[in-house]
Length: 347
Image (cartoon, rainbow, N blue to C red):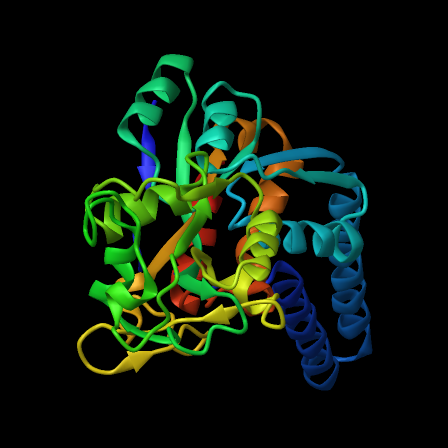
């Protein structure tokens, strides 16, 4: 029993692309054989290639069953998009169910053996590893994309669209601005309205909440009265309804709701940076607010259920293509390819 983690260091050549390439090479070999050794050899070579292709297609058709996934609401749009494409274009004989209980709630189901994958917007925790070990679950943790923590505003807020990172975080930290946690915009900048700021974010079930608390505000308490919600669409609605709102969540939920939300351009010390697919990068201008998001794979489920393994491969074959469609920056190609190679070692 072990828990294996993969850091930032992987993209995939899709299995269909590989098959197509292999088919093309075999066909070319057949043509060369015809030119060099006569038509009979060419016919035999082409017949062998056709037999191999039929065998591969038959193997794909033999994979059926179901795959269960739960976890991060942040990762949900990406994983549900991958699942949809997989079921429509890759294998309609497999049913992939994607839920979004939140990172912590989804991980709890996963460590109890209830799901095949657990999506997470943070790394697996030591106590979760201990539970997996106790339950005999062998885990592989894989990054799937990059997300940028995004600070959002009401769309009519035209005064707080540029802030320093210290100003942003002081709004959310209990006691940082006032002892009673009543914070006015004018407390942050004297030119701003003398109106109370209302703070919003995802609740404790979400890895985004944990990342914000643990990594961005160094474990300090959120200010009293912060409105924490389970559902991200609810957060979007609440911020859109409140002119004095400021909230935090993953970039994808902002990108897909730009008509309903404003965004804060943050100065980390070298000028204001607006989160975007171009700036979200672990080594770029928005690095301080950039994080990897993950999926965790139950290794025994992958060994025992061909549908789980087939879907796992597919995730990394298309993650670079589908990540930007769902508000994530893709991982480097070599990192995703490396992760496919790690999957192949399971068998």
